[in-house]
Every structure is written in C-alpha cells, then in structure tokens.
Length: 445
Ligand code: PLP
Image 1 (spheres, protein in one colour):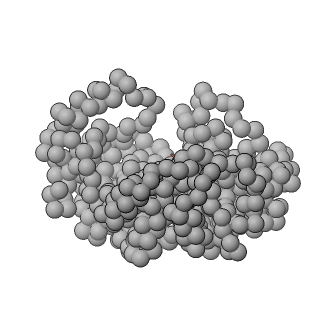
Image 2 (cartoon, rainbow, N blue to C red):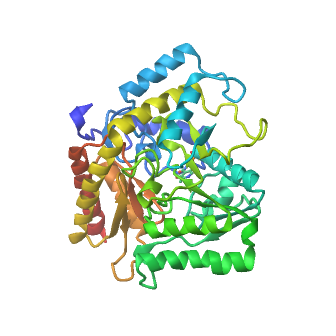
Image 3 (tube, rainbow, N blue to C red):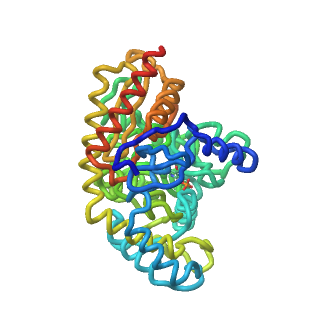
C-alpha cells in the first residue's frame, strides 16, 4: 500500500465510493455523522486504502479505536485462532478462558488498588450503563453528577449523562432522572483568567456550593462520572488538580468516582489510562474503543468490594465475546510491551510540531493533548477566540482531499487520534498535510 505514504489517485469520492454512498443513502440510518466521504476497502497499520485505490494516512482510527493499527497481524492471528475454536458461548451463562484471563489482565493494569472485577459489554455506552447501575446498586443512592461538554454514549442512561451537543439529546427526552451537570475546566477559554488550580477550584465549587446546596443532597448522589480528558467535547485536558480535588470531594461525601476512559484509555495518552497522569485512583473505570483493536468490547472495571451484585442483577448476552476477548488480550500485550511508551514519545513530537504551526497560522488558537490524543482548536481570531466552526469542517475536508484522515471534536477542534503505531515520519507527514489544509482554508478567508 504505497510503502507508507498517502496517495490520492482519483477525485474524491472516486466512482466506486460514490456508488456505495448512493446505496448507503437509500438503506442506512441517516442519523450517522459522516464528515467526509471515505469508503474503506482495507487498512494496514496507519494506512487506509479506499475502494478506488486512494491511500490515506489515518489519524482518526475509526474514532480512536484501532489502537494497534489496522489489522495488526498478531491481533488477526488471535482472532482467527479463537474463531476456529468457538465464536460465542455467552460468558454470562457459561465460562471460557479468554474472558477470565482478560479480567485477570485488566485487574493488573487498571489503576484501582485492592482487587478489581470486570463486567463485560459490547460498547462504550454499555460500559457506562454498567457503571451507572453499579454505582446506584452499590451505594443505594440514585443521583449522578456528570459534566457539561461530556460525551458518554447514546443509550438512555449514558445519554442522560451526555451533555455534548443538543442534537444528540433533542427529541429523546425525558432522560433518566437524578442526573446533574457541572462545568468542566476549559483553561484556554477561562473568562476569569484563572490559574489552572483556581480554575479547578471554581468548577468544583459549583458542585459543592450550587448543586449540593440547591438541587440534590450529597447523601443522594451515587457517583460523579468524569472523562479525564474530555473527548468529543474538544480534547480538553483539565488540570491534574481538578481530578485530584474531585477524588477528595467524592471520598468526602461517600460518592463513587467513575472515570470514563472509553476514548482516553488503552494507552492513547501515553499511560495505560489518562487518569494515571493525575495519580488519582478512581472506583470504577469504563473502557471500550481501543481495548480490542476494533472488535466490539466494553468493560466496567471496578473495585472488587463494590462489585458484589448477585447473579441476575446485570448481564449482556454478547458481552465479553470470546473473539473480542482474544483480540483484547493481544492488544493489551502489544500496549504493555511497546505501544503505550511509543504513544507518549510520538505524541509529544506530534504535539510539538502542531504547536509550532501556531507561529504562521492565526487560525490555530490552541494545541493541546496528551500522547496521541491531540486537539487543535481553530479560532476566528486569537483575541476574541471566536469558534471557527465552519473553518474547522473545511480544514478536516481539505485534509481528507490531501490524504489525511482526521475528525472534528467539539465545535471547532480538529482531533488527532491515530493508531498508536504511528511512526515519527508519519507524524511529520500528518503535520505537513494538516498545515497545507490550514493554509488552504486561511487563504479562502
Ligand atoms: N464515552 C466516551 C468518552 C466516548 O468518547 C464514547 C464514544 O465516543 C462513548 C463513551 C460511547 O462509546 P460507544 O460509541 O462505543 O457506545
């Protein structure tokens, strides 16, 4: 596949892509958000070939999922070997080794002390549903606090926590009762000009001085659910102090701290889990996306003493599918052996190179992230910091036409969430193509 470089051979979308998109339009739910018309034929590592033979450098990874790259040979071999033995036996009613072994491995890597148990589902939303249900069951309390800008999924429980874009909620209410939202630190946009520490305090004061005073009594709140880096909300990295104070607050009131690592977990930030950068130990960790390199798997991993719900309380027929577990076991091995450290190293390089673009490109307001979870916020100008939403979409499209796959996040952020196998050279290629896209959009203004 072109030996590592993107190559665009046709106008986009090419003829075969156009034909498939027309068929899709007739029969597939129109609720999906397709930013640009990519029709994949195959993928390998960080490269994706479309049905017309165009090759793209993938910095989207199927929304931060293909952690070990497209079709990593070890993952494919493990999936194949498991598929030849058995495809399904429902780990909720029977036993099989891949699920047990995965739970054992997760107990080792999940940053919770004193024993960890795992519940297996099929998606990020299911991991959140399990976390909400566990929090309510274990505490006997109903209330949940989440954050404005957060994204936790689209099933009714998870959607009740999600407060990212109104289009995701409009027409679907009423939502699960007992959910409250608080502000999440956005230090780039702090109107008060606060230090990160003061900003953290300000956001948490809203919980303690407003929510817990006017709306819900602390003894009625089961958990606070937080993304340690807000993903769909715009790749917002909160100060470490924010997460540490959140831990102190939850402990103080007997609430659980649930971290949603669906997007930020599995090595993406250069640590196995993003919460580890702050040193905080949560009570529950929700995982999905990168955990099985592309096969469906969601996990709610919790303090063992919390997860003592009896048989029948919660389960999922397909959850912990043996083929997904086999993929996850190899994924974890690759992450631990090399890719977590690699993500830290290449991610630091990518962040530095993207940040340097600010010097020549006024469209770029802020560059932030950890590891290979990097966001570039586009602004109409750097004084008012107006959100350059149309320009963001135009940059993502212009990048696509140059052979670079990225995704939007929030209203005006371009996100880089490549497979964790991205090389330094590929990171440089990505920055070069991205700069061309930014230059093109700036020249149109
Ligand atoms: N939580 C976070 C932080 C996410 O980014 C997402 C998806 O983008 C979800 C939960 C929901 O995951 P899924 O789409 O697998 O249900």
